[in-house]
Length: 257
Image (cartoon, rainbow, N blue to C red; front, top):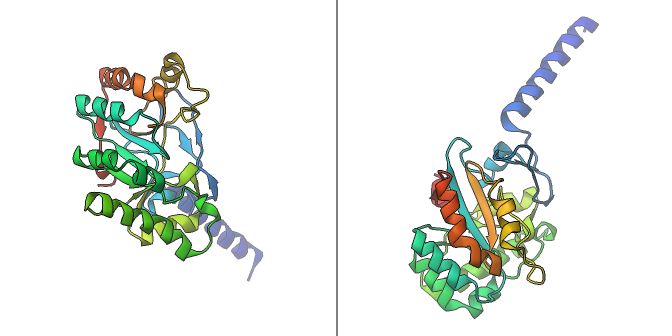
């Protein structure tokens, strides 16, 4: 084969690769902790895996960037008295949220879990024991973390758990995403969060608003911790402010429809 023909062939191959990357954002998904880069105020951030990369595993971190819709989610590893006030505020504003819970939370707070379900919130799977799932190589051990929580939810509510999964601490691997998809789960990351989880150093109201107002964006999947006293205190005003900015609130069911 002549050198000129080889050059033409390689040029075609490289072009095809470039087109594929542009369309699909690359096929592989990194292993590690979920991360975001906020580049423009009020615009969606860039995740460390692209939308198209995640979609192949029924995973998302962002809704429609053209729609002024917010998807509100809460993570909870334990209860410290803030969730009831949060639920009251959500009821007042008629906003449905998703609560990603772990096993000990469900075992110790059955009444709150029942209330979440009864008031139309999604109770999502945050695993039974909150491990670093990216370090679990055995598929059976991975599945057990999710199915044990499903069993507990069924025991408490008499209903089947809706299949939404959030990796503890946002740590994940491509294999995790594949296994979750095989189990029928949709994996939910986030496009907006702030340091609200440290009960020994809770942010002030002003500090919380300085993160949650300028960085809100179309299609935002917001992660808050229901253990945060600050979140319980500001949620009423926060939802009002977001509504005044023209945002509405959607369910994860809408996000994946």
